[in-house]
Length: 445
Image 1 (cartoon, rainbow, N blue to C red):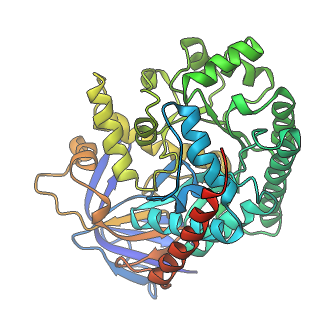
Image 2: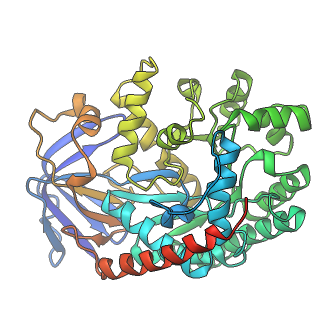
């Protein structure tokens, strides 16, 4: 029995029902929470004891949509043409980067994205991957980086025909199925996988009907749901109406791709009928405010109508303290009525998606929940109680306060230190990034 006891902590629940408990112990046995309360750890002789006096423990945060392949793009120095609309942004920037990725580049992307997430208090990243020059085995590489750092995750390959037609579609589907079966084999061997699988797709405008049919077959074969961009830009909507004479969501539903483990992303240009259908199917929709602002694609004015709304970054790092702030302030700037508690619930709802895939309970510091925890060194200058807990998340707390992180009952970062040489990894990543950038410069849109 591997028991860890956090003593004299403040325990804060970060989604409804919000609560704050002072001076309590949190007891973790293996990968789960087994006790929370005053002096709850006193009966566990021989346990590892961590003095959490003056610290605030919150459930680990979930980035519900990430792009690990963007890990080496920060400040990317390449020659690029005009980027005056969304399709130009994709062709001149992201679709050239993903074609330049190889196994080494992907491995270091995964490492640094995972490290950045943990350092920011994010314990789970749901990844959406593309590397057209390295498809087979690519998800294994992403999972390897996640596992070595210790972040929980899910990943998938984004099926698309944009480079090589149906051959590329089939390769992407095959990679999704292969990785899902590897995860299944871990479970059959009695192991709890740290990284789960989904069935990825780029966006409906790069997936023909044959591709959607193959994705549905992959979902049925693996028991997983889709992870797919929809209506990020109005072009996706126009393309669907012009080519298929259907709303995007209706097209997906006609192929049976909407379910309670489906994750759609962006949805800025979905109409009321589509939102209603998403809700009827109990599917999830990820909001990515920083990315939407960066790509100048607009604002999702139907956020409040989505039942299973979650929060992602679309590759803009794994810092969910930053993302929730920007989500809140952009919403207020757009005249929206939501308060910090509403966005805290959106962020926390990523845990419900995890439960669909891992089959266990996430997102609260209570008995029976998974021990994915973030320990903050947060000095609150005003009272911190249940009624204003979400206000402290948006207005006060930040990744600077993250001191330690536990995932699956293991301390993956303790006192702001990892169990490996972070500087060495970042130095090597910079070398790899420089090589990738040179390759990007040789790729034409």
